[in-house]
Length: 83
Image (cartoon, rainbow, N blue to C red; front, side, top):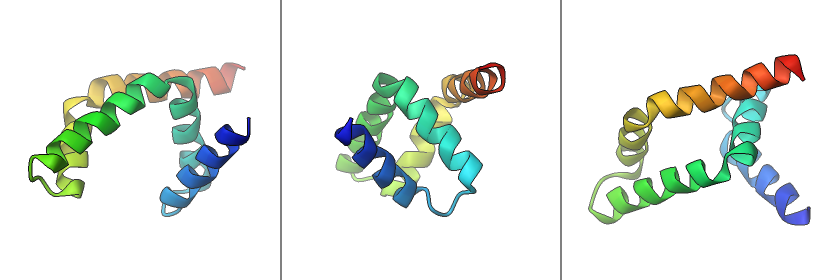
């Protein structure tokens, strides 16, 4: 529980530039699908270790997995609106 709180607070800090509703949407998606987001982080980290700039690596991985990411985010939005 405390770990979840800390992760949520760290994510809010990282996502501070986004509107609050988008922050919550992303945080909820990460909480619901942690394995997927761990995979994303691993893929990004591998690209950075390979010499790619971090921001470029993030964009590349997100672009590669955009369909799955969009599906997860839309599922979360549908769950929120129906739950």
